[in-house]
Length: 574
Ligand SMILES: Nc1ncnc2c1ncn2[C@@H]1O[C@H](COP(=O)(O)OP(=O)(O)OP(=O)(O)O)[C@@H](O)[C@H]1O
Ligand SMILES: O=P(O)(O)OC[C@H]1O[C@](O)(CO)[C@@H](O)[C@@H]1O
Ligand SMILES: [Mg+2]
Image 1 (cartoon, rainbow, N blue to C red):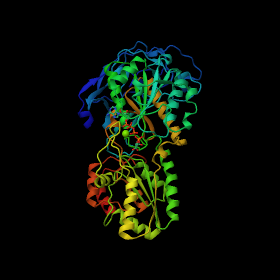
Image 2 (image 1 turned 180 degrees about the vertical axis):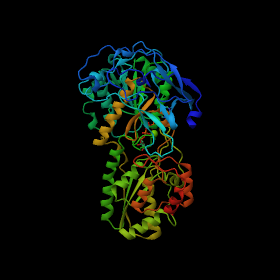
Image 3 (image 1 turned 120 degrees about the vertical axis):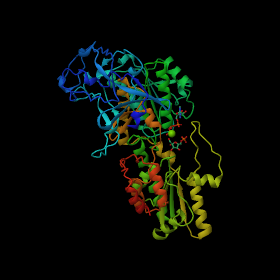
Image 4 (image 1 turned 45 degrees about the horizontal axis):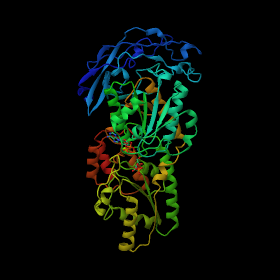
C-alpha cells in the first residue's frame, strides 16, 4: 500500500500483460474468464494490438497447447494500465488489485515503443514442447513474494511469473543476442551461458549469439566470441566462465554504443549485485534512446547475498565443496593434541556459505559470520569457548566467513581501506589473523599446548563446476531469461521466488543485500547445533530484531513479524 501511495505518473501497460483477458486462445477455454476488479489505483488505457501470426500448422490437438492465431488481429482490446513511478533513478511499474494485491512488474518494450508487431511463439510447433498441456504461461500469472499467509492479511507483493508467452516480439532471424559475465567466479556460470545459447537456438531458432569477452569492459575494448551449441556443448563440465570476467570498467554510454553499433537486440547479463546495478543503468539508457533491445539479468553470487530470490545458483555447489575443507580440518584437529581446525570460506557481507556448511557438516564447533559480531577476550568471548571445548573434547573446528570480524582486524592492524576495481572493499585475511590470535593467546597467556591448522579453500570453492542440482537450476534460469526477452520483457532479473521462476525488477535485486538474520530461526538452529556462544546480549537481540525484520532467504524465509516473539527470543538467547 505504501508503494501504491508513492506512485507518481502513469504509463501504458504492455499489450501482453493482461492479454489473456482478450481472446488470444480461440481453441482453449481460458481459466481466467474475467479481468480482476479494477480498483481506484488502476486506470484503463486502450492500446493497439498488432499481432501478425501467420502460420497455423497444427501437430497435436489444439486444446493441448497454447494456440496462437490471427484471431485478434487488428482489434483494439481494452488494457489495464499500470502506474510507473520514478524512484531512485529507476522506473517502478506497480499494479494493485483486490485485498492488498500488489504486482511489482517488469518493464516491457511496449512501455516505450509503440505499435510493435508480435509473432506466434515458435514453440507451439516444437515437437518437444507442443505436447505440453498449458505450455504457455498466462499473462496474469504472478508469483507471491511470501508463501506464509494470515487469515486477514493482505495478499501482498507479487512478481511476474517467468516462462514462454504465446506471442513473441522477435522473429528468430531478427535476434542478435549477446552474453556477458561480470564480477567474481561462481559454479554454474558456464552452464548458464550454455543454456542461453542452446535455449535460443533450439527453442526459438535463433542463430546469432555473441559472447562478450571479459566482463563489461569487453563491450568496448575486447573481441567478441561467436557462440553456437557446438562451441558451448561441454562447457558446463568446467568451472569458471569461458567468456572471462572482470570488475570495474562499467561505462554505460560506451556499452550501449557498442550494443547499438553491433546490432545487438538481446543482452544477457550474468553477475552479482554490482553487475545487476550495471544492467539496470544499461537498460535505462537503452530505454532513453528508444532502442528495441531486451536487457535480461541472471543473478550470480556465491555469497547468496542477492535478496528476493530463494538462493543463487552455485551456492549449493559451494556449500558441498566447503564440506571437503571442513572434513580435512576435522581430521587434522582430531589427530593432534588440542587440535583446532580453522577453515575460512567466502562471504564478504553475508555468512550463508559458512552457516550452511556448518549446519551440513555437524563437525563444526563454532561458526563466525559478518552478521554476528564476536569478541575474543573475557567472559562469553571466543577464547573462553575454545578453551572449554578443548577441555571437553580435545579438539574443535571453527568455520569463519571472510567478512567476519573485520572491525576487530582493522582495529588491531590499522589498515587503510582498500577497494577493488568495482569499489568493493578489499578484506583483510581474517583466517590468518584469527589463527595468530588463538595461537598467541594459548601459548603465551595460558601455556596450553594447541595444534592449530588453518585451511583456506576460498577460491577452490568457487572455481569448481556446478553440481547436478545447480546445473538444473542454471538451465531453468537461463531458459526463463530467454523466454522473457523473446516475449518483449526487459529490465528484469530472472530468479526463483518460493520455488517459482519469476521476473524481478532490477531495483528489487539491487536495493539491499540478503543477509543472515541472526534473530531468525536458522541461526538459532546453528547455535543449538554448535553450542557456541551467541556473542549477543538480550539488548542486542532486541535492537537487531527492530533494525531488520527481513527474513533469512533459503528455507526459513517467512519469519513471524509478531513482536510478542521478541520476549521468547530474549529468553532463548540469554
Ligand atoms: N553501481 C554500479 N553501476 C554500474 N555498474 C556497476 C555498479 N556497481 C558495479 N558495477 C559494475 O558491475 C561489474 C561487477 O561488479 P562487482 O565487481 O561488484 O561484482 P558483482 O557483480 O557484485 O559480483 P560479486 O558477487 O562477485 O561481487 C563491474 O564491471 C562493475 O564496474
Ligand atoms: O578476489 P576477487 O575475485 O576479486 O573476489 C573475491 C570476492 O568475490 C566473492 O566471491 C563474491 O563473488 C566474495 O565472496 C569475495 O570476497
Ligand atoms: Mg557484489
